[in-house]
Amino acid sequence: MSFLLIEAGKNSPFVCFDFDGGTFKVGGRSVIEQPLEFYQQLISSIGNYSSSAITEAHFTFEFEYFNTSSCKCIFNLMKEIKKLEDRKSVVINWYYDKDDEDMLEIGEDFEDILEMPFRMISRDRLD
Image (cartoon, rainbow, N blue to C red):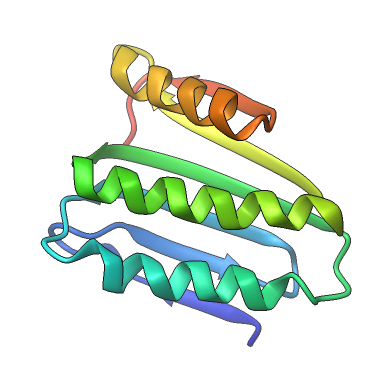
């Protein structure tokens, strides 16, 4: 598996996982009614990626908004990413709209709970 591409839907985020290149991006809106199904495929793919020979993994999260049930699933995805730290150098970029303190705080909470360094990156506006 070299790529996992999912275009953004009205209520679902975009996903661009390049397993061979070690770059992973997720973002947009996530207000999915059944987020477990959507995010489970991402979690499984990261679990399978852990045995890859690539030594670095760069994750970019660019959420405009997500609801509470999606937040739990995103946190579970983060927990799977944390497992990679034993075998790979992991970089997490957390983008947020400069006027969205809630999204910044969520990123900071994930960073604290998981004990993983995040690069917090402010943008004028996420689209």
